[in-house]
Length: 548
Ligand code: AMP
Image (cartoon, rainbow, N blue to C red; front, side, top):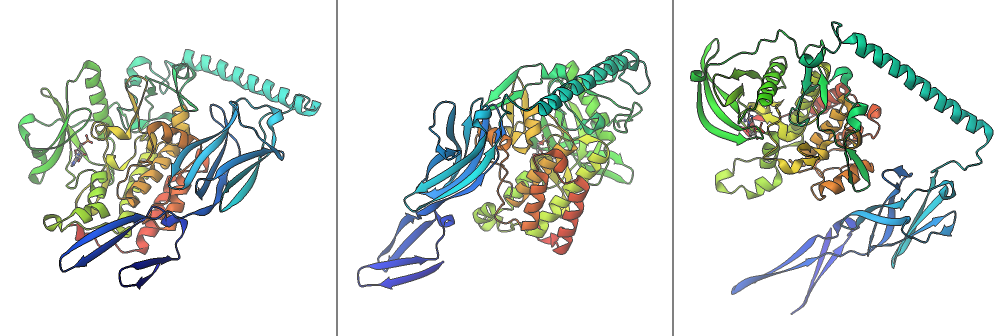
């Protein structure tokens, strides 16, 4: 920006050159001062510019049909739609809806309720304000006309018959598996081998057969909530079937720690299940008398709560990796039940990012002057370690379902590990969305298929990893912080993605976009993400010592 000040005797002019629409909303402060005192005045920039259509996308089927668009312009442009060059007159069944406005950018839909073949064809959007206009076209195909030719009709019949045939064979196979599978060595072994979970979001790490967790048809038969234009099935009691895989081995040996060996020092935080304390633990490691640990307590353990606790302990005992927080064992001599973990000096990653961001650095006066803003290479180093932990989880056919910076921990020398065990929900309750009775969903980290169909897979974890990258490069901002939960659901299901953070290199944002492909099979593979992050991190040296 180029400034030119023409000083007159009593009046001065400030000329601003080279402004662009992105400068809209910036505040100019005028500060005048002489020997007697000082005063200030503010002015907010309001830059007027012609409208542009940023995006006009093919129709999407949500609860109704939607032709998504994003437009910009100041003053807010007037929108007109044309269908096959005829102006569309909006009414209840066809109308423009603006879902979100950020500054002078407006996102919305041309909503069509039950369109038929009559509505097929070219749609033109024209946006106009007093400074100019812009237009864009898109082709829309909602339904085939009723007089579709014989061949196409016949093909449709073949497809329907084909699908029915496959479904019939599937049913027969299911019956056979249910009848004979119960007694087979690797099949479902009745209730004793079923991992039941009253609250599907309470247990963070889920071992999922085939790496896929599509709800069964009976689960889909449950209630649904309608949020905006999206119908979300509410599944209160998903059941995960134990496999013969490596995680939940029947012979898992969970280490038991004596209560008198644990000396509590101070509280570290509180989660949904209970308090977390810093403690000293004696006689835990052969060559050390005592070590610092983090102990998590389980308050008011019911019968099923205790069962979940033991299952989780078995599961954690089998998860061992340099980027997964170390689980040492349990103490169940009396209430409260305790889990003992390695102590990670700098606590959760979200808090850590916020305290090493520009806001924290600005606030850091004399006493906190050691606070240093994270560099890009440090951010990459953090991201790369989380990706390494996720590669391991995927190799174990584990689906995390709740990967977020609040669920990662930071130790000395910027060592980062995945460490969520479903206990962060109270502190970060605004990160979750409650559906049905007590199910909390981290929707801001979830891809469309998890929001709409509760489908959680290694690929949906990849989506969440993309959001974690975004959190890292925004110093711990909440994704879509400017939107309500309902708006976030609309936004994600409509295919919109988070914007590139200011301090994020293009290569890293491209990686995020690779995690946020709508079709899960199009997303980057976790191993690819890890090696990309590794090579980006290698390109820039990391100076760890500044963090102390
Ligand atoms: P959680 O219930 O797991 O979210 O833990 C609550 C808080 O306790 C977190 O926000 C962390 O700051 C802290 N905390 C949890 N686990 C550890 C750990 N292993 N080492 C250090 N701090 C921890």
